[in-house]
Length: 149
Image (cartoon, rainbow, N blue to C red; front, side, top):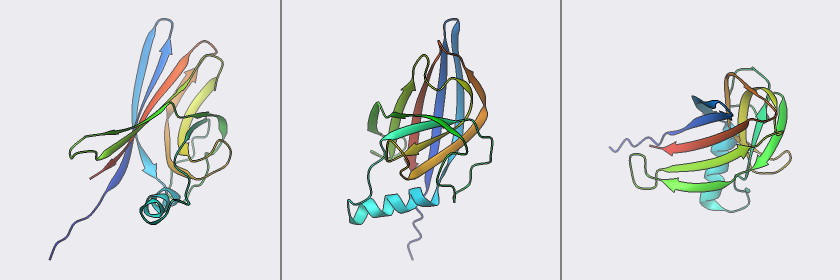
């Protein structure tokens, strides 16, 4: 009997870029129940919109699969790029990149999520991390990977 178990996990790298240097934080994240449903939907139909936006927030509520929104969203930007990468097997990873520039999403950032719409929409992944204090002149760049193994 073949026992092939597909695993889906996420990993996000956050880079806060200040005038005096760069701070890097790396966090694993939750693939939500809605996110898993979005994946299976794309295999059989195209009615589920593709992921297109990344949102930041200030909630420290623990990430859980059943969540459909951030705890306290403060800003959402369109993804800058979507790329297929090879991590272990050919094209087994999708990487989403997004940047929040000066004067965008300023404050004590503690959570992020990927959505399929500019407003509302479905959240496929969510992560909570130690506070990143983003000032008005700082830039926060995120590289978010979804890895299939």
